[in-house]
Amino acid sequence: MVHSFKKGLLSVLFLILFLITFPNQTFPQTTQPRLRIDARSAVLMDALTGQTLYEQNPQLKIAPASFAKILTLYLAFDAIRAGDFKMEDLVTVSKKAWRTGGSQMFLRVGERVKVEDLLKGIAIVSGNDACVALAEHLTGSEETFVSKMNEKAKSLGLKDSLFKNSHGLPAENQYTTALDMAVLARRHIEDHPEAIVFHSTSKFEYHGIRQQNRNTLLWRKIGVDGLMTGHVEEAGYHLMATAKQGNQRMIAVVMGCDRLQKRAREAQSLLEYGFKNFSLVEAVKKGTPLGSVKVKRGKLNKVQLIASEDGKVTVAKGKEDSITIIPEVPEFIIAPVQKGQEVGKVVIQSEGKVVKEVALISSFDVPKGIYILWPLIGGCILGLLLLGSIILWLIRRAKRKKF
Image 1 (cartoon, rainbow, N blue to C red):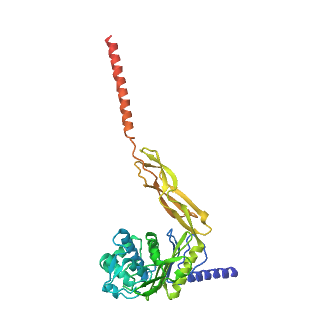
Image 2 (image 1 turned 45 degrees about the vertical axis):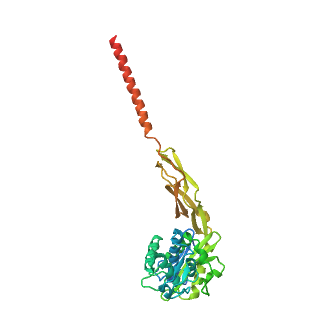
Image 3 (image 1 turned 120 degrees about the horizontal axis):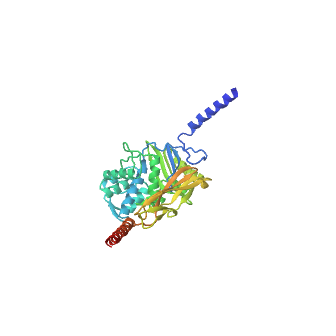
């Protein structure tokens, strides 16, 4: 009895020690080795599937520092794609942009700078002056640009972020979270893959001043090709990094390290953990036929359904065969049906848990049939035949009575 009590007490003490040592730790779909990141907040995300593979205080609100520049760049690439301006367009540097402190690309008042150079100045050397110059060029003032930043943040699903300037220098009530920044990084490289060329550049020279990219992971040959560092006294040292190995791309976000050297080390630990312990599985390929559904009142009686997108999912290594695909479609649909119309979905599961859903769409048009006319025509013909029979019967009867 005493031995059992001691054993139980030791188990409780071990559990308490574990919870103290490894707080806020989750391992979705895996039983991988324990991981502890020496930062206030951290997130590891699969860039191709959007699945969170590790999180530590993911929704802790922290000053964004230069992470705000990723949203500034996102809006700039949006504007270029929309045709609002071009890479070779010239931007006149204002006194406000020139006066902006912190990291700079060393612009001069009144000079005209190519948009491309401003993008490099932001992405490579984290130029605060370049952010203000670009913001003013895009919307007329930095204040208007910041309102656009917050609008875009909401549309991208950044639930816990508020921006007060275009560069991330300290400002009252300006904050974000590691989870929001992972989401932003994913959308940035997904929607604007051309930005990676800027983020992966190691050096940038302007006005004879050569500066090095502050993301030291670019030199470690682990597949890192972006994105952004950051630091403000109140929050500590941040690093948002992305790396590609084979068919996988990971995003690591660490925020609030107490020393400069830690942010690269901890981000690297996250990336290596992701590549070592997880696999990317293409459960469904875009355009793959996945059954058919009955069509009523159409020129055709059924339509083939195809996957609307690639169904890629992330699973723990060794669990690749645990993927199951379950189509969910209605018993029938009513014509007309348009090509590309969403009709059902396919549910992708790993070990019985839903990890992704992909819409099933019609592979071709099914026009409305003339089903309404046939019953009417048939009814009229039947009625006329019946009426004719009655008239013929009456005529014959009348003839018999006459004779």
